[in-house]
Amino acid sequence: MNDISIEIHIKELKNRLSDRDIFDIQELLRQLKGVEKGFEYVREIDIRAVIKRGALFLLRDQKKERVMGMASLVLVPKLTGSVLTIEDVVIERSYRGQHLGRILTEAMLSFNWPIDWGSYVESFPRRYELTSKPDREAANRLYASLGFQIRQTNPYYLDIK
Image (cartoon, rainbow, N blue to C red; front, side, top):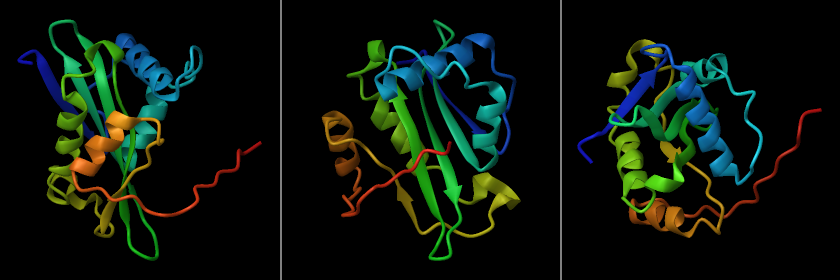
């Protein structure tokens, strides 16, 4: 565990992502979505767009120089009260079972809001929100153990054509 670090990017990338970083992020997204192909279109410019509205947390294996986990925290302004949405939480398969998902999620929850975000704060968020598929049993146990509650709602989506 000494070779693991958490890198937090707020509002902008601290440093340029390497081609290997981009590849690792694409692979993590494939694992998250359970697909063999896809996400090749995710580029540094797309990652920068997410960071502009929030923060990207990368879990790094310093020894292997790889991104082994990631999550994003996005501020969503709403008239009923802004929320921090936790998205794309994933740990690379070979690193799972080491409580790294907990470490990553706790890092997001302990993030010093709004001090770490500086003048970026337009409105103070009132809660964290996330979604997790019911079959992701370990993730759901983790979120429950951290105090997240299941909200009874129907999630809908409509693809943009």
